[in-house]
Each structure stands twice: as structure tokens, then as C-alpha cells.
Image 1 (cartoon, helix red, strand yellow):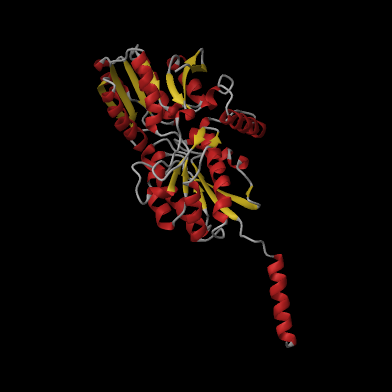
Image 2 (cartoon, helix red, strand yellow):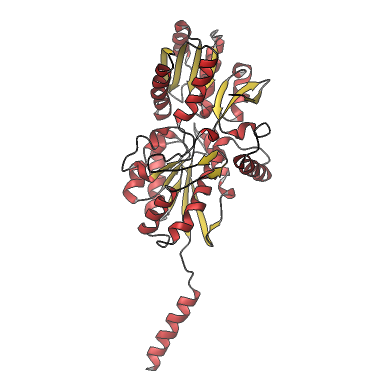
Length: 382
């Protein structure tokens, strides 16, 4: 062997000895930490430092971006993560409408997307594009069924609906129409509003004139407050229900006396001190403690949705690594397949059993009934 060949061989050997077995795993995180969805997006952004740092011995790097609650900015951020950062998966965005607008890009690029959004429309009905999307919140029908069961037990015969004019509110309207019909509850009014509206007196008066036994408000984050304060100010005396979109402490502060007695269904994070001992409670308690140590305040449940996305990836990555290296289409496809095989994984929001048909994967362990009593969240027996 010539001297030149020996140097080339030595170089190759040294290179193979110093190189890691795999490239780093890159995960993009898009949140709405400013703008109308900020109450949802801020705890999600703040949860990034608490996400798993490695899986199967390989480091995980998170690349955070803020879309300012703007769907157009969400698309730009999504494309940047895919085309420039070459990420292996994306967690986010925060808003349902924002998420609906990027599903096609997740599918075209073959990039798993873990959406911490409220609407089930991101994963249902399942399509070729949506098979790349996984959802870390409870589907609307799971939450809605708990509310309708409570309505039946308490004699609600007529119901008014008001929700945001976006995929979140629209899907809730669709789910409630079927559930109400199946349970002999008549929907006597169905109103909608824009998240940025500063007055919804007209819609509230229409609800008031219909005189329903109860009203369900389907709106995420801070937008869930205005319909309720307006209904109360116009004299509505019936029971008011909210979705898991209102499951955050600022709802209590912004709503004040007007939200007293509200009933909603959500994960146990709102009532951890009252919830029975379960693996999910233990994980949620640790997450809340770690969040508080960083920010000196408790996280909204929406932060737990991003944390759970990290747990799902941490569990799926070892399986995907057996097939391909990070940074490749083959790895992203293997990661998607592994996510779809998640079984009995406990997170802050409940227990995940993901199947090709169900990319949310929650059962009744992912919800509890909650009311507002004396300005605080109170566990309500089902």
C-alpha cells in the first residue's frame, strides 16, 4: 500500500471514530406566544425547556418559533422548519385554524406534526394528509359527552350554542348537534363570533330570547370569557357550560363573578390536588412543579399539551432509530409509524393509545368534570 493510500485509510478511520452514530434529532416548536391566542401559546412556549433532552442516547434539539397567532406566519414558520432547519418533527402550532392551514405541508414533506390544539378536525376524519398529524388534546366528542351526560342528569332539555367562527367552534357545533339529538336535547339557538370581537351583545340577546335551559360556549383561551360575561350582563340565569378551551386560570380572573358555577370538562391538571392518584397525576404534578421552579407560577393546561408531545416523541424515537438516521425522510416516516403505535403512555393530559384511526388516543382517563366555586376550580363528581 502506497504512503498516500495509508494516509487516506487513516483519515477514514479517524473520521469514523470521531463521528457520532447518528445526527442530532431536531424538533421545531411553533407557538403563539403573542397575539389573540397568547394565553394558550405562552405556557406552550415556556414548556420547551422542560421537554426531554435525549432519547435512546441521542440528543434532541428544539427550535422554537412564534407565529404571533397569525395563520400566515404559521405557514412561514412551518416551511422554515422543514426547508431550512430540516427538522424531524414539529410540535405546534397553538391555534386550531393555524394548524388546519399547515397539515398539507406536513404531509407533502413527510414530517410528523404533533398539534396541541383543541379541534378534532386536525385528525378527523382521517385522510392521507392527516395521517401525519397527531393531537395532544382530547377530541371534542370525548369532552362533549361528559358535558351532555351532566346535562341529562340535571334535566337540561333545551340548549343554546355560541362558538368561535373557526375550526374550533365549527367542529364543536357539529359534535353537539349530533350528541344533543341522540340525547333528546333540542338546540334552540346557535350563534358564532370572531375571536377578536369586542362586543357580542347581538348574539347574546338572540340566545336570551331563545330561553334555553343551558348554554354551551365553545371558544379557546381568552375568547371563552366575553360570551359568558355578556350573557350574564344581559340577564341569562341558566347553566353555562364551557369546553376544555376555557381550562386556564386567567378564565377565572378575567371572568370574575360571571364565571361562578361554570361547568366544563378538561384534563385533571386544573384540579391536581383533588384528583385521585394515577400515573397521569404523578406526571402532571412533576411537570407543574418543574414549571413553577422556572417561572414562579403554575402553567395552564395548554402547556401540558406541548409537554406530552415531547413524551410521545421520546417514546417513539428509539423505535424510529432502528430504521433510519435523523434528518432523513426514512427516519421521519419511521417516527410517524412509531407514534401511531403508542400504547398506554401516560402524560399530563391522560393516557395515550394511538391507532391508525385515532391520532388523539384518549379515553375517559383524559377528562374530569370541573366547576367554578368561590372563584376556584372544583372537581365535580360525574
